[in-house]
Image 1 (tube, rainbow over the protein chains, first blue to last red):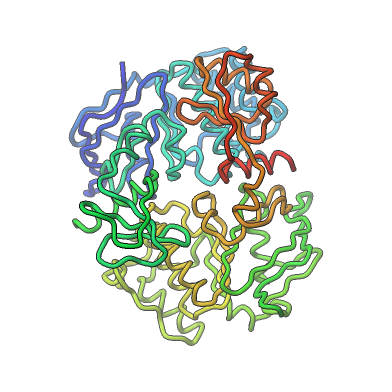
Image 2 (image 1 turned 90 degrees about the horizontal axis):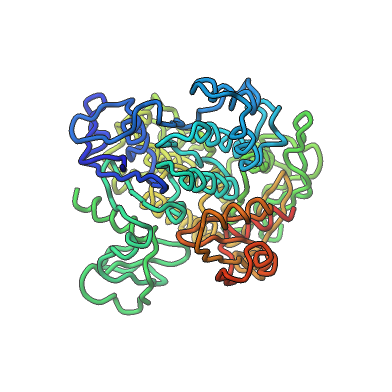
Length: 269
Length: 283
């Protein structure tokens, strides 16, 4: 059975935080919800785990005890050691602390040598890996992690995604939110949120393939067509018809697809 | 001063038992964008604070416009800290007016979709717009050197494209820019990159120079989960990417030894992110 949303809308303090969002979080797969600050990522996480009720739509989720949830920038007790943090989670779920599972998670997170260090003394990357290990420990049916990689360096980010892939490999349905578009490649399903609405959804590949029209590269800002700067060059978007003279056609990447969609939305409003 | 706007010469800074910055020498010249990348805790913000003259190095020397940092050199710098340095209980217009008075210049114009936001409290704006206001404030006195600490953190793709357009325009107009970022596609837009790891500059150069000779082995396993587990327990760096596993900076032979002959392997150029992983592992 798959978890997720069917047409979910959430109102918070009189404002629409997310609107008509569909979401599939499948066991054995990692779903990434990607968006800028204020796009609705945290509301999506909180609604999926049942901390917020939708004003419309259906939320499909397992019973609360079978959910692992790591809110943004939280999750570990800084004045407990790595081992104590894991033991606390074990006891909260009625499991024996210090189990084989505990040792296995210390090993896969590379935290074995830091087992007796206070969580507050760990680097950001190590602390976040501990948070993921804590979410994985009881083998939940669904794990939801809000921005587990924000502020981490590329290597630590890759390690966190590797752990999420491992959790999915154990059969858990994993949802992680992020502000980094390139992390879409690490997930099986991707939902891009903008201003509370779904801007694009699918696999990274299918989102790239959904680009309508032609994308070109030019050295100077083109006139008369939607364009945005990438590096030392400009991307120009011909929605229908040919590219302007002097533009060289390139295949759009995820960043281009999402930028074009955001541009369309900005112009429509 | 040979066109160098900012220069650090083997600067180091220790906090109690933590050597935050360890012998870093870099320079920023007019019209160039230098990207400072590295993990949280690698020393980027400490380094920036020393370069600005806000923190005194234990060892080494900082030169701004050819001299030691002073209040006069500070006037020629536009600095946007991660915390933005805006007053949240003032409006956008009041913030820009305040900054302009401090520097004795005309306040920045609010253009495009910022035009209607002059009377909004900064506290009421989403982070993306707040960053753009912070950026305008740091640019209003037309600084010769721009120092931007994670200017696009938490900002959406379109907002990031807008911010980078302004950064490139400032450089085209003659400013030197030092910028930190965790976004690799932004790092690729820099003229030069410096990779900090545990306080040391472990790599320096253009994107091409940093990528030169860096390869990643791509594995297409039949059973991804068991291949992942085998490679990880051998201590190799593995990045799951779609249906593949990518191993930066690892030889084909070492992967073959672990997975046997039945698995498809290919060698490809490393991405910038993968190259940084290889460099950070090596240091």
